[in-house]
Length: 326
Image 1: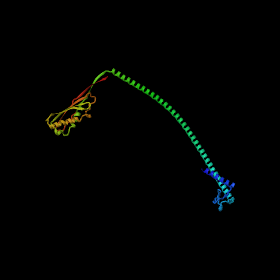
Image 2: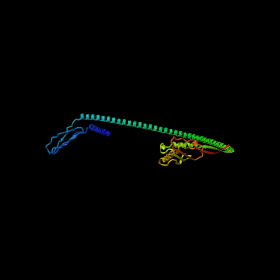
Image 3: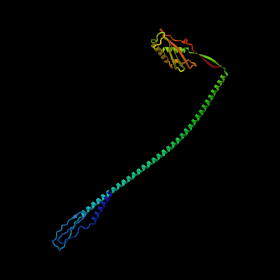
Image 4: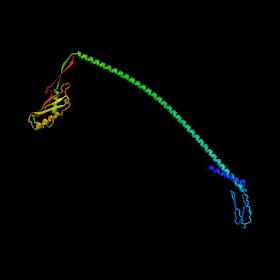
C-alpha cells in the first residue's frame, strides 16, 4: 500500500511539471450578447484568476473582452522547484523504502539460511544420534547374545557337574547300602550259627505298689480324720494300664459303722485315687510285659499317726522269659 501511495504521488508531480513546462493558455475570449451577461472563468491547477466584466446595455452590439494575462513565471518556477524537491524527497523515500525492503529481504534470506543451517545441523545431529543409538543397540544385542551363550555354557557345565555329583552320590549310597546289607547278612549268618537259648528276668513290683498306695493316702482330704471314726478300716482297689489310666475304682468299709460320716470317707478315698490318673507315678517298671495291673490296699483310721507302706508290704514279682544266642 505504501509503494502504491508513492507511485500515485510521483504521477501527480509529473503531471504538474508537464503543465508547468508546456504553459497552456490561461485565458478565453468571452462573448456577451443580449441582455444577460455570462462570465467564463479560467483556472489553472494552482490558482484561479477572477475577471470582472461591466455589462453593456445593448442587444445588438457584441464586443470581445480579453481576460487580463497574469505573468506567473516566478510562481511556476517556484512550483517547479517545489515539485522537484517533492519528487526528490519521494524518490529518496522510495529509495529508502527499497533499501529497507532489500535489507528486510536480505535479513529474511539470512534468517532463512540460518534456519536452514540450524535445521540441517539438527538433522545431522539427529542422524548421528540415530546412528550412535543403532550402533549401541547392536553392541548391546551382541553383548546380550554373548552373555546368553556364556550363561547357557555355564548352565550346561553346572548341570554336567550336578549330574556327575548325583551319580557319584548314588554310587556311594549304593556302595554303603550294599556294605550295610553285607554286614547285616554276615551278622545274621553269625547269629544263626549261634545256639538260641532262653533265659528269665525278674521284675519287682513291690516298690511300685508301695509308692502308689502311699500317694493315695497323702492325697486324702484333711477332713478325713474328722469324718472317719478311729478304728474304721477302708479297703480299695483299682486298675492301672500301661498308659497310666485308672479304671474300676472300688472303695469299701471293711470294719466300722456304715453311716453318713463314714460314707464321706469312702468318697474322699475315691477322689484321692482318681487324682492320680495319668500322673508319672503310675509309670510301669522298665522291661515289664504287663499291659495292666490291679492295685489293692487299705486305709485304717487310727488314733495315732499313720504309718507308710514299704516294699515288704507286698509280694509281686514278674518273671519274664527271653531268648538269646550263645
